[in-house]
Amino acid sequence: MVPKDMLKSIVFFEDLSDEMLERMAAIADLRHYTEGEYLNKRRNPADNFYIILEGAISLETEDITGKKHNLETLMAGAALGFSSLIETESKRYLCDARVITTPTRTLRFRASDLISMFYLDFELGFLIMKKIALIAKRRLLYRTLPLASLTA
Image (cartoon, rainbow, N blue to C red; front, side, top):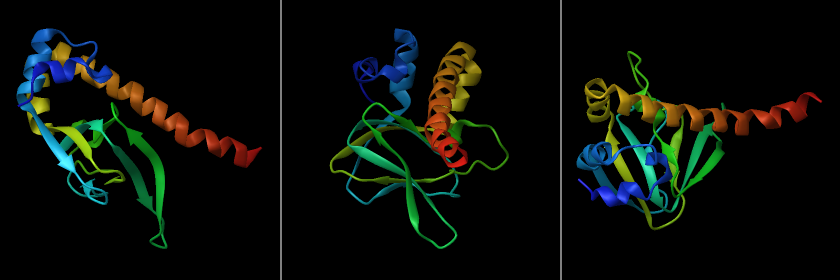
């Protein structure tokens, strides 16, 4: 549990009412990480959703030779772990999330708690998933725009 005011200052939660923020704060867990630690690993069960409060996290993937590639660097205010909230039979993370600066602090939400809350409050679920869809769209554009230059 974290103070509701901590969530109020985060853009990701800007559309939520005070009551919604209170419920979200009640299930949030403040986590601290050091450089090199992983929040999640690709193909591992996707159990958590995160908001970065401080620091930087590299979203990475591995090519067929085993070399790691940075897809994107996320900073304070960014959300990650969307895979945990997408209802599929076997939820898995799509990339590694490695801490690249110390200190790094996040809010961690257990996906099962969030999904239960979304079924009880459809408006809350809609607002969170709407925000996730917007961020996912931006990330897809960011990652696919360089491909256009390859075909030109």
